[in-house]
Length: 102
Image (cartoon, rainbow, N blue to C red; front, side, top):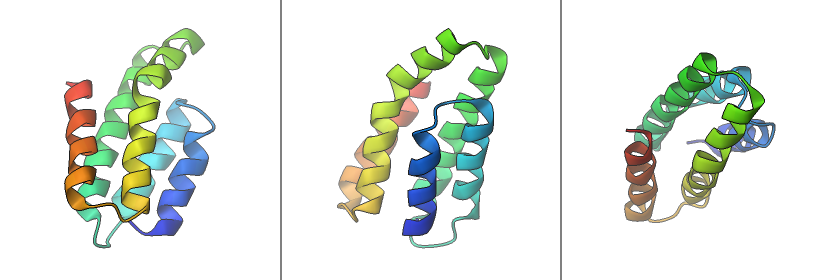
């Protein structure tokens, strides 16, 4: 991903897992055309799934539970891509995130 898009996703992420925030982050993923397009695609799908869950149960309690469960791993994933971490480590975080969502 391009660092500008990642920084924007991280900024929005700090505002919480509200539906509109998740959809904005997802849009940044779909706009990615750089070298990290695979990571962007997988992250975009994960954010879409989370947005669907928030849409189904939009109450603060449910949103906080999703944040507790997914936020640390999403941050690690973003940091690994932003920091140009080894692709193996990036893949490890992405696979872990997908498994958590299944």
